[in-house]
Image (cartoon, rainbow, N blue to C red; front, side, top):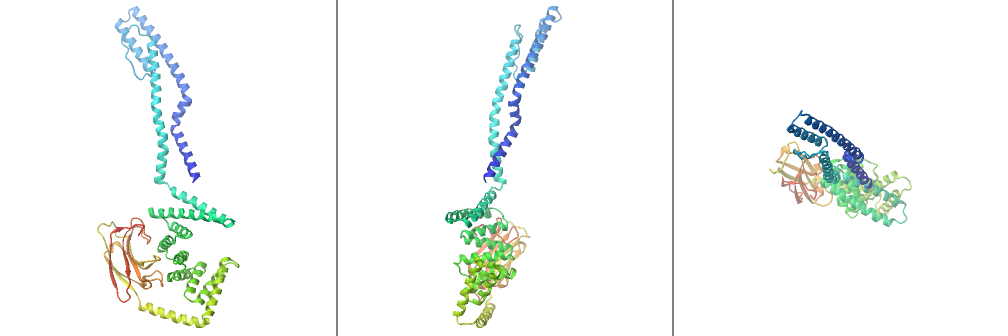
Length: 469
Protein backbone atom coordinates (compact mmCIF):
# COMPACT_ATOMS: atom_id res chain seq x y z
CA UNK A 1 0.00 0.00 0.00
CA UNK A 2 2.93 2.32 0.73
CA UNK A 3 4.13 1.81 -2.85
CA UNK A 4 0.71 2.92 -4.12
CA UNK A 5 0.79 6.11 -2.04
CA UNK A 6 4.35 6.99 -3.12
CA UNK A 7 3.55 6.33 -6.76
CA UNK A 8 0.37 8.41 -6.55
CA UNK A 9 2.22 11.36 -5.00
CA UNK A 10 4.92 11.22 -7.68
CA UNK A 11 2.30 11.13 -10.44
CA UNK A 12 0.42 14.09 -8.93
CA UNK A 13 3.63 16.12 -8.73
CA UNK A 14 4.51 15.29 -12.33
CA UNK A 15 0.98 16.23 -13.39
CA UNK A 16 1.24 19.61 -11.67
CA UNK A 17 4.65 20.32 -13.20
CA UNK A 18 3.44 19.29 -16.65
CA UNK A 19 0.31 21.42 -16.38
CA UNK A 20 2.14 24.51 -15.12
CA UNK A 21 5.24 24.09 -17.27
CA UNK A 22 4.40 26.96 -19.67
CA UNK A 23 4.10 29.36 -16.73
CA UNK A 24 7.21 27.96 -15.02
CA UNK A 25 9.18 28.14 -18.25
CA UNK A 26 8.20 31.77 -18.77
CA UNK A 27 8.90 32.82 -15.20
CA UNK A 28 12.27 31.07 -14.94
CA UNK A 29 13.77 31.38 -18.40
CA UNK A 30 12.03 34.13 -20.32
CA UNK A 31 11.70 36.84 -17.70
CA UNK A 32 15.12 38.38 -18.37
CA UNK A 33 14.80 38.05 -22.14
CA UNK A 34 11.32 39.55 -22.13
CA UNK A 35 12.43 42.48 -19.97
CA UNK A 36 15.40 43.19 -22.24
CA UNK A 37 13.25 42.93 -25.33
CA UNK A 38 10.65 45.30 -23.91
CA UNK A 39 13.32 47.79 -22.89
CA UNK A 40 15.01 47.73 -26.32
CA UNK A 41 11.69 47.98 -28.12
CA UNK A 42 10.68 50.92 -25.96
CA UNK A 43 13.97 52.71 -26.72
CA UNK A 44 13.50 52.21 -30.47
CA UNK A 45 9.93 53.46 -30.29
CA UNK A 46 10.99 56.57 -28.37
CA UNK A 47 13.76 57.24 -30.91
CA UNK A 48 11.33 56.91 -33.80
CA UNK A 49 8.91 59.15 -31.99
CA UNK A 50 11.54 61.86 -31.63
CA UNK A 51 12.54 61.61 -35.31
CA UNK A 52 8.95 61.93 -36.46
CA UNK A 53 8.34 64.78 -34.03
CA UNK A 54 11.39 66.61 -35.44
CA UNK A 55 10.01 66.14 -38.94
CA UNK A 56 6.70 67.60 -37.83
CA UNK A 57 8.47 70.62 -36.26
CA UNK A 58 10.38 71.21 -39.49
CA UNK A 59 7.21 70.97 -41.58
CA UNK A 60 5.48 73.45 -39.28
CA UNK A 61 8.32 75.94 -39.63
CA UNK A 62 8.36 75.56 -43.40
CA UNK A 63 4.62 76.18 -43.56
CA UNK A 64 3.84 72.76 -45.07
CA UNK A 65 1.32 72.18 -42.30
CA UNK A 66 -0.59 74.50 -40.05
CA UNK A 67 -0.79 74.42 -36.26
CA UNK A 68 -3.97 72.30 -36.12
CA UNK A 69 -2.49 69.67 -38.43
CA UNK A 70 0.69 69.70 -36.36
CA UNK A 71 -1.19 69.03 -33.12
CA UNK A 72 -3.26 66.29 -34.73
CA UNK A 73 -0.22 64.47 -36.17
CA UNK A 74 1.69 64.84 -32.94
CA UNK A 75 -1.16 63.31 -30.94
CA UNK A 76 -1.28 60.43 -33.43
CA UNK A 77 2.45 59.80 -32.96
CA UNK A 78 2.06 59.66 -29.20
CA UNK A 79 -0.86 57.22 -29.42
CA UNK A 80 1.10 54.91 -31.72
CA UNK A 81 4.06 54.99 -29.36
CA UNK A 82 1.91 54.00 -26.40
CA UNK A 83 0.27 51.15 -28.31
CA UNK A 84 3.61 49.82 -29.55
CA UNK A 85 4.88 49.85 -25.94
CA UNK A 86 2.01 47.49 -24.81
CA UNK A 87 0.30 50.05 -22.61
CA UNK A 88 -3.02 48.55 -21.44
CA UNK A 89 -4.69 51.82 -20.67
CA UNK A 90 -4.18 54.89 -22.79
CA UNK A 91 -4.53 58.29 -21.30
CA UNK A 92 -5.48 60.42 -24.23
CA UNK A 93 -2.93 63.06 -24.85
CA UNK A 94 -4.62 66.35 -25.15
CA UNK A 95 -3.15 68.92 -27.36
CA UNK A 96 -0.46 70.41 -25.11
CA UNK A 97 2.54 72.08 -26.55
CA UNK A 98 4.68 70.89 -23.62
CA UNK A 99 4.17 67.12 -24.31
CA UNK A 100 7.47 65.31 -24.66
CA UNK A 101 9.07 61.85 -24.69
CA UNK A 102 9.15 61.88 -20.87
CA UNK A 103 5.33 61.60 -20.84
CA UNK A 104 5.54 58.47 -23.00
CA UNK A 105 8.22 56.99 -20.75
CA UNK A 106 5.86 57.39 -17.79
CA UNK A 107 3.18 55.52 -19.72
CA UNK A 108 5.61 52.68 -20.47
CA UNK A 109 6.39 52.42 -16.75
CA UNK A 110 2.67 52.30 -16.02
CA UNK A 111 2.32 49.44 -18.53
CA UNK A 112 5.09 47.50 -16.81
CA UNK A 113 3.42 47.97 -13.42
CA UNK A 114 0.11 46.81 -14.90
CA UNK A 115 1.72 43.61 -16.22
CA UNK A 116 3.16 42.91 -12.77
CA UNK A 117 -0.30 43.35 -11.28
CA UNK A 118 -1.74 40.85 -13.75
CA UNK A 119 1.00 38.38 -12.82
CA UNK A 120 0.10 38.71 -9.16
CA UNK A 121 -3.56 38.16 -9.99
CA UNK A 122 -2.71 34.86 -11.75
CA UNK A 123 -0.83 33.44 -8.77
CA UNK A 124 -3.98 32.49 -6.76
CA UNK A 125 -5.37 30.81 -9.85
CA UNK A 126 -2.25 28.66 -10.22
CA UNK A 127 -2.22 27.85 -6.51
CA UNK A 128 -5.87 26.81 -6.68
CA UNK A 129 -5.04 24.57 -9.62
CA UNK A 130 -2.22 22.91 -7.65
CA UNK A 131 -4.68 22.11 -4.83
CA UNK A 132 -7.59 21.04 -7.02
CA UNK A 133 -5.60 18.68 -9.23
CA UNK A 134 -4.65 16.24 -6.43
CA UNK A 135 -8.15 16.44 -4.94
CA UNK A 136 -9.71 15.68 -8.31
CA UNK A 137 -7.33 12.76 -8.76
CA UNK A 138 -8.20 11.32 -5.35
CA UNK A 139 -11.92 11.76 -6.01
CA UNK A 140 -11.75 10.01 -9.37
CA UNK A 141 -9.74 7.15 -7.90
CA UNK A 142 -12.23 6.68 -5.09
CA UNK A 143 -15.04 6.54 -7.64
CA UNK A 144 -13.37 4.54 -10.42
CA UNK A 145 -10.39 2.89 -8.70
CA UNK A 146 -10.05 -0.32 -6.69
CA UNK A 147 -8.24 0.76 -3.55
CA UNK A 148 -9.85 -1.89 -1.35
CA UNK A 149 -8.51 -4.63 -3.65
CA UNK A 150 -5.00 -3.20 -3.32
CA UNK A 151 -5.34 -3.11 0.46
CA UNK A 152 -6.71 -6.66 0.47
CA UNK A 153 -3.80 -7.89 -1.62
CA UNK A 154 -1.35 -6.31 0.81
CA UNK A 155 -3.09 -7.95 3.78
CA UNK A 156 -3.10 -11.35 2.08
CA UNK A 157 0.61 -10.99 1.36
CA UNK A 158 1.22 -10.12 5.01
CA UNK A 159 -0.89 -13.10 6.07
CA UNK A 160 1.22 -15.47 3.95
CA UNK A 161 4.39 -13.96 5.42
CA UNK A 162 3.14 -14.45 8.99
CA UNK A 163 2.17 -18.05 8.26
CA UNK A 164 5.67 -18.78 7.00
CA UNK A 165 7.16 -17.20 10.12
CA UNK A 166 4.79 -19.17 12.32
CA UNK A 167 6.02 -22.46 10.87
CA UNK A 168 9.59 -21.80 12.06
CA UNK A 169 8.99 -19.57 15.09
CA UNK A 170 9.95 -20.60 18.62
CA UNK A 171 7.52 -18.08 20.11
CA UNK A 172 4.33 -18.40 18.03
CA UNK A 173 1.91 -16.74 20.48
CA UNK A 174 2.47 -13.21 19.20
CA UNK A 175 2.26 -14.33 15.57
CA UNK A 176 -0.98 -16.19 16.24
CA UNK A 177 -2.56 -13.06 17.75
CA UNK A 178 -1.48 -10.93 14.78
CA UNK A 179 -2.68 -13.56 12.32
CA UNK A 180 -6.08 -13.71 13.96
CA UNK A 181 -6.44 -9.93 13.98
CA UNK A 182 -5.36 -9.74 10.34
CA UNK A 183 -7.77 -12.51 9.45
CA UNK A 184 -10.61 -10.58 11.08
CA UNK A 185 -9.74 -7.50 9.02
CA UNK A 186 -9.65 -9.57 5.83
CA UNK A 187 -13.02 -11.15 6.57
CA UNK A 188 -14.67 -7.82 7.46
CA UNK A 189 -13.33 -6.24 4.26
CA UNK A 190 -14.53 -9.14 2.11
CA UNK A 191 -17.95 -9.17 3.78
CA UNK A 192 -18.35 -5.48 2.95
CA UNK A 193 -17.14 -6.10 -0.59
CA UNK A 194 -19.64 -8.93 -1.10
CA UNK A 195 -22.47 -6.81 0.31
CA UNK A 196 -21.78 -3.73 -1.85
CA UNK A 197 -20.82 -5.12 -5.24
CA UNK A 198 -21.01 -8.15 -7.48
CA UNK A 199 -18.08 -10.47 -6.78
CA UNK A 200 -16.79 -13.64 -8.40
CA UNK A 201 -16.91 -17.07 -6.80
CA UNK A 202 -13.18 -17.03 -6.00
CA UNK A 203 -13.76 -14.03 -3.74
CA UNK A 204 -16.48 -15.89 -1.88
CA UNK A 205 -14.24 -18.94 -1.46
CA UNK A 206 -11.47 -16.68 -0.14
CA UNK A 207 -13.92 -15.11 2.30
CA UNK A 208 -15.21 -18.49 3.47
CA UNK A 209 -11.72 -19.94 4.06
CA UNK A 210 -10.57 -16.91 6.01
CA UNK A 211 -13.78 -17.04 8.04
CA UNK A 212 -12.95 -20.66 8.94
CA UNK A 213 -9.47 -19.58 10.00
CA UNK A 214 -10.83 -17.08 12.53
CA UNK A 215 -13.70 -19.30 13.71
CA UNK A 216 -16.53 -17.39 11.99
CA UNK A 217 -18.21 -20.55 10.75
CA UNK A 218 -21.61 -18.97 10.06
CA UNK A 219 -20.05 -16.63 7.49
CA UNK A 220 -18.02 -19.50 6.07
CA UNK A 221 -21.09 -21.73 5.68
CA UNK A 222 -23.12 -18.99 3.95
CA UNK A 223 -20.40 -18.29 1.41
CA UNK A 224 -19.45 -21.92 0.75
CA UNK A 225 -23.15 -22.56 0.19
CA UNK A 226 -23.43 -19.60 -2.20
CA UNK A 227 -20.54 -20.99 -4.25
CA UNK A 228 -22.07 -24.46 -4.24
CA UNK A 229 -25.41 -23.05 -5.40
CA UNK A 230 -23.67 -21.62 -8.46
CA UNK A 231 -21.35 -24.61 -9.02
CA UNK A 232 -23.09 -27.77 -7.76
CA UNK A 233 -20.28 -29.97 -9.12
CA UNK A 234 -17.51 -28.54 -6.93
CA UNK A 235 -16.32 -31.39 -4.66
CA UNK A 236 -13.68 -29.41 -2.77
CA UNK A 237 -16.22 -26.74 -1.86
CA UNK A 238 -18.60 -29.49 -0.71
CA UNK A 239 -16.09 -30.99 1.73
CA UNK A 240 -15.04 -27.57 3.02
CA UNK A 241 -18.71 -26.74 3.60
CA UNK A 242 -19.15 -30.10 5.36
CA UNK A 243 -16.12 -29.39 7.55
CA UNK A 244 -17.42 -25.91 8.49
CA UNK A 245 -20.84 -27.37 9.38
CA UNK A 246 -19.18 -30.13 11.43
CA UNK A 247 -17.10 -27.68 13.48
CA UNK A 248 -20.00 -25.23 13.82
CA UNK A 249 -22.11 -28.07 15.27
CA UNK A 250 -19.51 -28.61 18.01
CA UNK A 251 -17.80 -31.44 16.12
CA UNK A 252 -21.09 -33.24 15.67
CA UNK A 253 -21.41 -34.97 12.29
CA UNK A 254 -25.05 -34.19 11.56
CA UNK A 255 -26.48 -36.00 8.49
CA UNK A 256 -25.60 -33.23 6.03
CA UNK A 257 -21.89 -33.67 6.83
CA UNK A 258 -21.86 -37.28 5.68
CA UNK A 259 -24.14 -36.49 2.73
CA UNK A 260 -21.86 -33.75 1.41
CA UNK A 261 -18.77 -35.94 1.93
CA UNK A 262 -20.34 -38.84 0.01
CA UNK A 263 -21.45 -36.56 -2.82
CA UNK A 264 -17.97 -35.04 -3.10
CA UNK A 265 -16.32 -38.48 -3.09
CA UNK A 266 -18.61 -39.64 -5.87
CA UNK A 267 -16.97 -36.98 -8.04
CA UNK A 268 -13.49 -37.02 -6.50
CA UNK A 269 -12.83 -40.41 -4.85
CA UNK A 270 -9.36 -39.44 -3.59
CA UNK A 271 -10.40 -36.31 -1.71
CA UNK A 272 -8.71 -36.94 1.63
CA UNK A 273 -10.74 -34.28 3.47
CA UNK A 274 -13.93 -35.93 2.24
CA UNK A 275 -12.70 -39.37 3.31
CA UNK A 276 -11.81 -38.03 6.73
CA UNK A 277 -15.23 -36.44 7.23
CA UNK A 278 -17.02 -39.53 5.95
CA UNK A 279 -15.08 -41.64 8.43
CA UNK A 280 -16.03 -39.28 11.27
CA UNK A 281 -19.68 -39.38 10.22
CA UNK A 282 -19.69 -43.16 10.13
CA UNK A 283 -17.79 -43.41 13.42
CA UNK A 284 -20.28 -41.18 15.25
CA UNK A 285 -23.13 -43.21 13.77
CA UNK A 286 -21.61 -46.40 15.18
CA UNK A 287 -20.73 -47.71 11.72
CA UNK A 288 -17.17 -48.56 12.66
CA UNK A 289 -16.36 -50.81 9.71
CA UNK A 290 -17.32 -48.05 7.20
CA UNK A 291 -15.34 -45.53 9.24
CA UNK A 292 -12.26 -47.77 9.10
CA UNK A 293 -12.64 -48.24 5.34
CA UNK A 294 -12.88 -44.48 4.70
CA UNK A 295 -9.93 -43.62 6.92
CA UNK A 296 -7.71 -46.37 5.53
CA UNK A 297 -8.36 -45.10 2.00
CA UNK A 298 -7.22 -41.63 3.12
CA UNK A 299 -4.14 -43.06 4.88
CA UNK A 300 -3.06 -44.75 1.64
CA UNK A 301 -3.18 -41.36 -0.12
CA UNK A 302 -1.15 -39.44 2.47
CA UNK A 303 2.68 -39.73 2.34
CA UNK A 304 4.05 -42.33 4.79
CA UNK A 305 4.63 -40.88 8.24
CA UNK A 306 2.61 -37.71 7.64
CA UNK A 307 0.88 -36.16 10.66
CA UNK A 308 -2.54 -36.38 9.00
CA UNK A 309 -1.97 -40.04 8.21
CA UNK A 310 -0.90 -40.77 11.80
CA UNK A 311 -3.98 -38.97 13.17
CA UNK A 312 -6.25 -41.05 10.96
CA UNK A 313 -4.43 -44.21 11.99
CA UNK A 314 -5.29 -43.39 15.62
CA UNK A 315 -8.91 -43.05 14.52
CA UNK A 316 -8.74 -46.45 12.83
CA UNK A 317 -7.44 -48.04 16.04
CA UNK A 318 -10.24 -46.48 18.07
CA UNK A 319 -12.82 -47.70 15.56
CA UNK A 320 -11.41 -51.24 15.78
CA UNK A 321 -11.55 -51.14 19.57
CA UNK A 322 -15.18 -49.98 19.41
CA UNK A 323 -15.92 -52.71 16.92
CA UNK A 324 -14.48 -55.38 19.23
CA UNK A 325 -16.16 -53.88 22.29
CA UNK A 326 -19.54 -54.01 20.55
CA UNK A 327 -19.28 -57.83 20.55
CA UNK A 328 -20.09 -58.03 16.84
CA UNK A 329 -17.83 -59.36 14.16
CA UNK A 330 -17.53 -57.32 11.02
CA UNK A 331 -19.72 -59.57 8.86
CA UNK A 332 -22.53 -59.59 11.44
CA UNK A 333 -22.33 -55.84 11.88
CA UNK A 334 -22.44 -55.26 8.15
CA UNK A 335 -25.52 -57.47 7.85
CA UNK A 336 -27.26 -55.58 10.64
CA UNK A 337 -26.32 -52.25 9.08
CA UNK A 338 -27.72 -53.41 5.74
CA UNK A 339 -31.00 -54.22 7.46
CA UNK A 340 -31.01 -50.78 9.10
CA UNK A 341 -30.25 -49.14 5.74
CA UNK A 342 -33.11 -51.04 4.08
CA UNK A 343 -35.47 -49.95 6.85
CA UNK A 344 -34.33 -46.34 6.41
CA UNK A 345 -35.03 -46.59 2.68
CA UNK A 346 -38.48 -47.97 3.37
CA UNK A 347 -39.15 -45.22 5.86
CA UNK A 348 -37.97 -42.56 3.41
CA UNK A 349 -40.38 -43.95 0.84
CA UNK A 350 -43.16 -43.78 3.36
CA UNK A 351 -42.24 -40.27 4.43
CA UNK A 352 -41.97 -38.09 1.33
CA UNK A 353 -42.49 -34.51 2.44
CA UNK A 354 -43.77 -31.98 -0.06
CA UNK A 355 -44.80 -28.36 -0.11
CA UNK A 356 -47.19 -26.68 -2.51
CA UNK A 357 -46.23 -23.05 -3.12
CA UNK A 358 -48.17 -20.32 -4.94
CA UNK A 359 -45.75 -17.64 -6.16
CA UNK A 360 -46.75 -14.24 -7.52
CA UNK A 361 -45.05 -10.92 -8.32
CA UNK A 362 -46.06 -7.60 -6.77
CA UNK A 363 -46.92 -4.77 -9.14
CA UNK A 364 -44.08 -2.57 -7.88
CA UNK A 365 -41.34 -5.06 -8.82
CA UNK A 366 -39.41 -4.23 -12.02
CA UNK A 367 -38.67 -7.33 -14.09
CA UNK A 368 -38.02 -8.72 -17.54
CA UNK A 369 -40.03 -11.68 -18.82
CA UNK A 370 -36.90 -13.81 -19.39
CA UNK A 371 -35.50 -13.32 -15.87
CA UNK A 372 -35.21 -16.48 -13.77
CA UNK A 373 -37.16 -16.97 -10.55
CA UNK A 374 -35.74 -19.46 -8.02
CA UNK A 375 -38.22 -21.15 -5.69
CA UNK A 376 -36.81 -23.32 -2.93
CA UNK A 377 -37.05 -24.57 0.62
CA UNK A 378 -34.05 -24.52 2.92
CA UNK A 379 -33.44 -25.64 6.48
CA UNK A 380 -34.65 -23.14 9.04
CA UNK A 381 -31.48 -23.62 11.06
CA UNK A 382 -27.99 -24.80 10.16
CA UNK A 383 -26.66 -25.01 6.60
CA UNK A 384 -28.56 -23.04 3.97
CA UNK A 385 -28.35 -25.83 1.39
CA UNK A 386 -31.67 -25.97 -0.50
CA UNK A 387 -33.66 -29.05 0.45
CA UNK A 388 -35.75 -28.69 -2.72
CA UNK A 389 -35.35 -26.17 -5.50
CA UNK A 390 -36.86 -25.35 -8.85
CA UNK A 391 -36.79 -22.37 -11.20
CA UNK A 392 -39.24 -20.72 -13.58
CA UNK A 393 -39.32 -17.61 -15.76
CA UNK A 394 -40.74 -14.33 -14.53
CA UNK A 395 -43.20 -14.41 -17.42
CA UNK A 396 -44.74 -17.57 -15.91
CA UNK A 397 -45.77 -15.83 -12.68
CA UNK A 398 -48.13 -16.25 -10.94
CA UNK A 399 -47.51 -19.99 -10.73
CA UNK A 400 -48.07 -22.93 -8.41
CA UNK A 401 -45.19 -25.36 -7.86
CA UNK A 402 -44.69 -28.37 -5.66
CA UNK A 403 -41.42 -28.91 -3.86
CA UNK A 404 -40.56 -32.47 -2.82
CA UNK A 405 -37.67 -34.81 -2.12
CA UNK A 406 -36.94 -35.37 -5.81
CA UNK A 407 -35.76 -31.74 -6.06
CA UNK A 408 -33.02 -32.09 -3.42
CA UNK A 409 -29.44 -31.13 -4.26
CA UNK A 410 -28.14 -34.00 -2.10
CA UNK A 411 -30.17 -37.24 -1.92
CA UNK A 412 -29.75 -37.57 1.86
CA UNK A 413 -30.46 -33.90 2.51
CA UNK A 414 -34.03 -33.36 1.41
CA UNK A 415 -37.33 -32.07 2.77
CA UNK A 416 -37.93 -35.28 4.70
CA UNK A 417 -34.70 -34.76 6.62
CA UNK A 418 -35.83 -31.46 8.14
CA UNK A 419 -38.36 -30.62 10.82
CA UNK A 420 -38.71 -26.95 9.91
CA UNK A 421 -37.90 -25.07 6.70
CA UNK A 422 -37.88 -21.60 5.23
CA UNK A 423 -39.46 -20.90 1.85
CA UNK A 424 -37.81 -18.49 -0.56
CA UNK A 425 -38.86 -17.13 -3.95
CA UNK A 426 -36.38 -14.79 -5.61
CA UNK A 427 -36.26 -13.12 -9.01
CA UNK A 428 -32.60 -12.95 -10.05
CA UNK A 429 -31.03 -10.14 -12.07
CA UNK A 430 -27.88 -12.21 -12.67
CA UNK A 431 -29.56 -15.48 -13.60
CA UNK A 432 -27.68 -17.57 -11.03
CA UNK A 433 -28.74 -18.89 -7.62
CA UNK A 434 -26.41 -16.59 -5.68
CA UNK A 435 -28.43 -13.68 -4.35
CA UNK A 436 -27.18 -10.31 -5.54
CA UNK A 437 -28.03 -6.64 -5.18
CA UNK A 438 -30.95 -5.85 -7.43
CA UNK A 439 -32.78 -9.13 -6.75
CA UNK A 440 -36.31 -9.13 -5.35
CA UNK A 441 -37.62 -11.87 -3.11
CA UNK A 442 -40.16 -13.23 -0.68
CA UNK A 443 -39.23 -15.26 2.41
CA UNK A 444 -41.49 -17.23 4.73
CA UNK A 445 -40.74 -19.37 7.75
CA UNK A 446 -40.25 -21.24 9.92
CA UNK A 447 -42.62 -23.83 8.49
CA UNK A 448 -43.14 -27.07 10.37
CA UNK A 449 -43.28 -30.02 8.00
CA UNK A 450 -46.01 -32.64 8.27
CA UNK A 451 -45.46 -36.01 6.62
CA UNK A 452 -49.12 -36.89 6.38
CA UNK A 453 -50.33 -33.90 4.41
CA UNK A 454 -49.40 -31.54 1.59
CA UNK A 455 -49.25 -27.97 2.82
CA UNK A 456 -49.92 -24.99 0.57
CA UNK A 457 -48.19 -21.65 1.06
CA UNK A 458 -48.29 -18.30 -0.73
CA UNK A 459 -45.28 -16.14 -1.57
CA UNK A 460 -45.52 -12.70 -3.15
CA UNK A 461 -42.21 -11.30 -4.36
CA UNK A 462 -42.30 -7.68 -3.22
CA UNK A 463 -39.15 -6.83 -1.25
CA UNK A 464 -35.63 -6.07 -2.55
CA UNK A 465 -32.96 -8.54 -1.49
CA UNK A 466 -30.69 -7.46 1.34
CA UNK A 467 -27.55 -9.24 2.58
CA UNK A 468 -29.14 -9.71 6.02
CA UNK A 469 -31.67 -12.06 4.47
